[in-house]
Length: 351
Image (cartoon, rainbow, N blue to C red):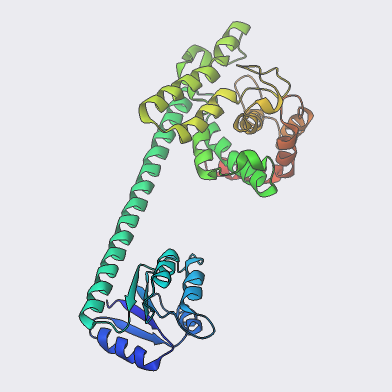
């Protein structure tokens, strides 16, 4: 397929000369003004733009400034083709994002070679960018696959909490997304990648992998001693993820997973475990997961208890706002509790 080149110049003779020079190798679209260029951009995606500087209404410098501030056009290579020969103009053009500066009158063979070189470079950049995007997507897929596998290992051992990880992931996305939309703890959440955060939260119970099956799958309430052992899954989970960080160097994604694992049993009033942290000293990820984790436990049936209704579970959470839970997050959860219930119903029907 022929490459498309825009030639933008208010001088009809110049347009004809350039068009004749390029027509055998490229599809040339001749445009007499910057305004007509922006109109043509709505219909065509050029592979390169040859742009004059001295034009009425909008000059070449103004035109490239507008191009480079628009995400749709920022990557189109621009070459100034101009009669200006001063260094200041050339410097300014390059600073504004032009890839080259060709003086008029030009040599046809030189013009063709330079255009060919720029198109080749642009093609290489696009090719390498696509390869990088594909590799990044593959790495994300691999990372998520490992996370899912690790989380499934824990859940397959814990016969009492089937579907817990999948359900809490859904609730996490709903609650965290709403907090971001509402600007709740906006400073803390600035820059959060919601999908990555939700994925890392799947490892919040990874520490249960070291808990004995006898305790993990006991068909009744735990004794005091057994509960103390069960409580260690939070600190054990943090240690497991710490080792993963040391071996992989993925400190960002796994750092969030470690926070979820270590702090999801802390309580707002300081009575939680394993650190007994209080209020906003508890990392935000832990405070969010605390509500989601408890909600899912309340509405799920266990060998030692019946499932609470959604309404009762929400009522319990709101009663514990300011004691067990961050009141600001609890209020958001209460506002979107119907969305959470709908997600739970959907999961129950299509696990």
